[in-house]
Image 1 (cartoon, rainbow, N blue to C red):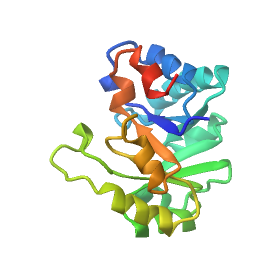
Image 2: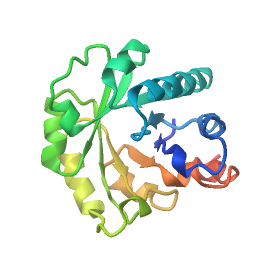
Image 3: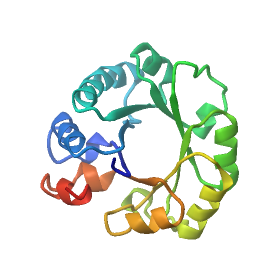
Length: 194
């Protein structure tokens, strides 16, 4: 199984978003997190149904983001919540997979105490998504990995060229957004080593 999680951002796509999701799913990532933070919940749900259908067809885990009530209503078993949302102590009993974003070892430990079954940690490397902010680096990633006993996925500037370094730092893998959303379709095979 792949050690790469796709994090979506349809505004970065150079082709139809659902076409891109299908192409990515065909490469068998570990999961696809449908992030799309700009959408109101009703529109997000309509898109989530379509993405979940693609993921189900291709046997790829789909993780819905932020809208945990809607995710439960859609029958999705995986949700990713920003730590401030996780802190609200929502009822997450419908989910077998609960992810949260963290920016420190303390954040990661808190997320796990609150029920997270995995965390994302970043940003590790320089990335256009965080222009002007210095990356936290591999030392930070190692600290986060040592602070929790759940899988940690690095985020921020992750690429095929540096994925082995995040795994060597203790991470279970990495999350990629822009590299998957806006690359040439043929480059997807390179990213996933196909």
